[in-house]
Amino acid sequence: MPFEPSSRIPPLPGNDCRPGKPSDARSDGFAGGCISLIVLLIEIPVALLLGLTSVIRGWGRADEHTAASPMDWVPILWLGGFTLGVLVIAATFLYSAHPFAGAVQLLVAAIALTFTIAAWHDQYERAHPPPQPTRAGMPPSHHVRDGQSPVSMKSNFRACLACG
Image (tube, rainbow, N blue to C red; front, top):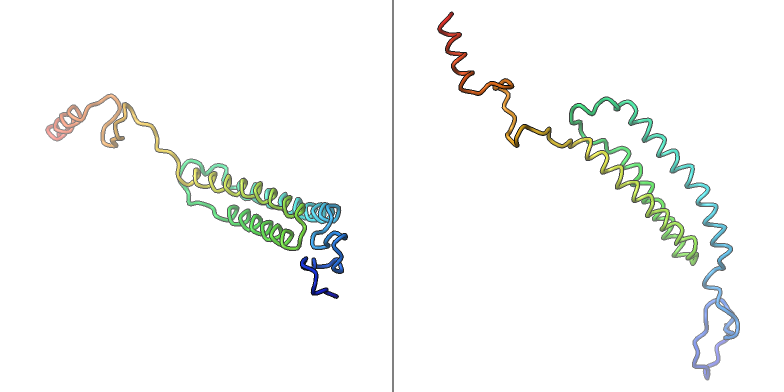
């Protein structure tokens, strides 16, 4: 790589030190679009498979909504791992001078992160159901029957003891 000491312009990488030629440091948009399309064609079936397995795992628990069950972390971790993998691919593309492919991967990662947060929220709501509503804001009392006050219950109890 020849360098003239009288030149004040530093040489650009990959263009044989000729100022008229554009630099090869960035690739063209066509290559980035092709790479992005190939990676998307791989990621779409993986994402569909993750969604399908999450739905199939949830079918067995369709009738479990009566009691609070612990959080199921498997779909959250699967989707989080997929999101992390897409982020690694996006960082690799951005580092290797494919900005279009990297931007598409960042968009896919944002969508995957949205699905990950939605899965976490669904599991959190399933594991922490809202409390049952009570009458007039009073806490539920298990020793009082409907329509009977605690005083009348006490007098009924005394009456039963006196009879027996």
